[in-house]
Image (tube, rainbow, N blue to C red; front, side):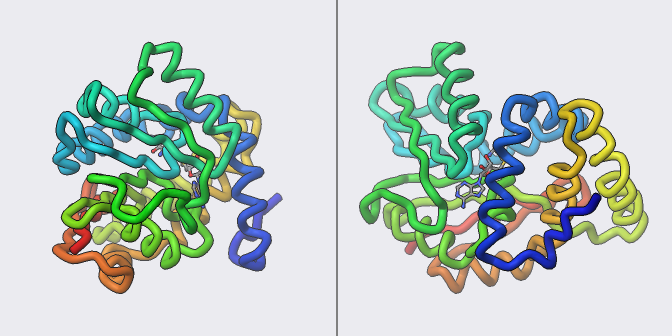
Length: 243
Ligand code: SAM
């Protein structure tokens, strides 16, 4: 069976994405480590480094899922800081909240169910916003970028960690083979759900490339935009600043 994500009308995509993440929530962390062979931890570490988050800062991790970035931000911002882990999906949010509470990550953490397209926060609230492997799942990415710009403080940073386009044809071939055959198979074996992982592979393929995404950030109002390719461009980290 095939999701045929490309053929789904915009309106229905949101429901499809919701279904995927309800289905994968409980096995999400294990799959992340397996699928990326642990490398997602390095990509996330670099994101934290580039965030320049300091004690006392207010940070929003949107599409935060099971809380990998939020956990580290919570330690950095300390007692006087604030970290909001927001996600549209209650199952992902529940798994993330339970995990962080179990690990004693409490006090400066908040959990909010929210859609990146219309963030429920006042203007100029956050010093930093991160969205890690989340933007490709958002239906209206331009609206989401505008919404993130609105809630950032002037001078605040947006960091987007996301799958992107490799520039090496050989790597692209290997990666396609991996994501379209091995990935759904692993999804089936580990999570009992190959369709969700088929969807994930398709959503990666359809995501805007580095230059396109940088242009979208500028259109949404960001300045000083820059991106860093990682692992041959399989993943890129985009940074932008609110003027
Ligand atoms: N940030 C985490 C990480 O890097 O491991 C989780 C990434 S997970 C692949 C994508 C997350 O995006 C899911 O938890 C999903 O519920 C969330 N998501 C999808 N569409 C969203 C939207 N419109 N607004 C907020 N979150 C969304």
